[in-house]
Length: 323
Image (cartoon, rainbow, N blue to C red; front, side, top):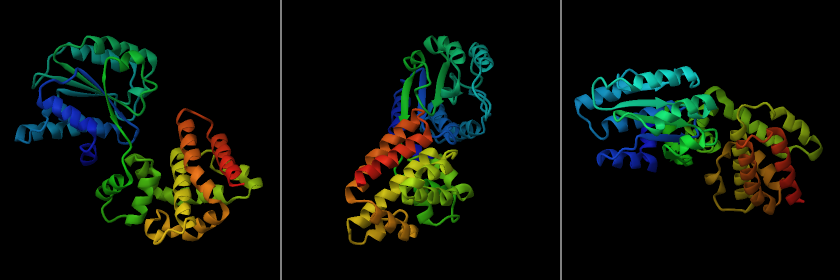
């Protein structure tokens, strides 16, 4: 994960500020990947405390940060928990104490988007006027649940979605020799640019059921579409399913357009027969329109639209374009 994050502009911003000794007192790291958010915070915590140093002392501190045992780098909440008022009270108390080893004490807080309003307000005073020896690194999967007053007192570090090749390479490092490249590339593409999403698809073979569900939605006759939608209504992989629908339409478009050597560019080449069915069933203009329609559906789901209704309406629009 560190190798991937080091390519992000947000990492380079903090790296330069550390080198020039002009760090902000509070940062908000935005990464739409709940599974890997804590590890990403550790990468930035190391950067804030030791920067580019590679000496024995820096390596020792980095190792302790990774295991959350460095005395001047405190993580809240406990793994798997949400930030609470009790945590906020503990942070207030810890802020009154001087650093143990160095000149700075870093508080790492994640996922801040899950903290309730009371907890966020409890920490607001510290973010407004932190002690001179204190830095804050907040993490969140989304900025929308974070209070505007908190946003205004932190420097936002946004990690955009990674491209398919970047995620694929990261997966190859995480799962050496466990999956073939085509499977990794498909999961990377279907994840929407998040390593955690791709990991969730890989582990347990979820990517197989995901493709089955997506093809079922696209190839079902219109009168059976509500039944097909109902079958995926409770899926935990809503964003990934929409991404898979987009990938199917992408590959079908390559086949429909008669592109030479199209097979070499297909992300679902093992599903060539079903892709051909989609290419036959949908007109060229519908395959093109599908990309826009599915992007809109993805945004609506992100803002808490009802997933089954959103998917059914999206497919119905694509089919209306097809007709």
